[in-house]
Amino acid sequence: MYRIIVATLLVLCISISTGHAFKNEPTGFRNIPWGTSIEEVRDQMIFCSEGVDGSGMKHYTRKDEPLEFDAAKVTKVAYTFWNDKLYGVTVIFKDKDNYLAIEDILDRTYGLGTKPNRYIDVQYWQGEETFITFSYSRITNVGSLAFISLKADQEVADDRAAKKRNVTLD
Image 1 (tube, rainbow, N blue to C red):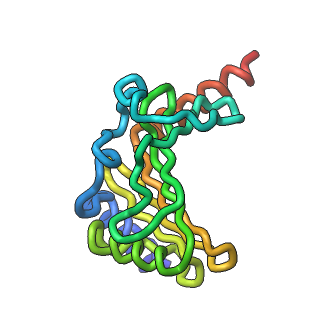
Image 2: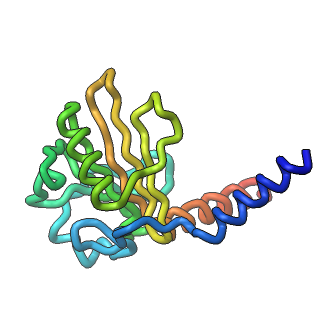
C-alpha cells in the first residue's frame, strides 16, 4: 500500500512539474488571437447562431474561409465567441482520408496527442493557453477538431458557477 501511495505521489509531482505545454501551442486560430473582440473582426464574419442554453455563446463562420486544413479538405470552420470575445474554433470534416491527413498534421505540428482510449478515435492536447480535441466517428464518417481558449473556458465556468450560486440563493 505504501508503495502505491509513493508511486502515485511521484507521478503527480512529475505531472505538476512538467506542466501542460505542447510544442507550437496556438494562441488563436488563423491570425485571430483568443479573446479578440467580435467588433475587431465583424466585417470578416457571418453570424450563424446563438447558444440556446443562455450561455452567451455566438457562432460565426468567416467570409471566404478556406475550407482546408493544410492538405485536408474540411466542410465547416465555426468561430465561437463568448461575451463577444473569441472563445474557440471548431473544424468539421468528412471521410477517413481527411481524418488521417489532419491527424498527421496535428502530430507533426503539436506532437503526439493524448489518446484516452485506443479503441476510440479521440485525442487531445492541453497547453497553457489552448486545449485541442480531435475526434472522428467511423460510423458517421464525420470528425471534428476543436481549439478552445483555456482562459475563456475558465471564465465561462466561473460565470456559470456564479449564476448557479445566484439561482440557489434566490
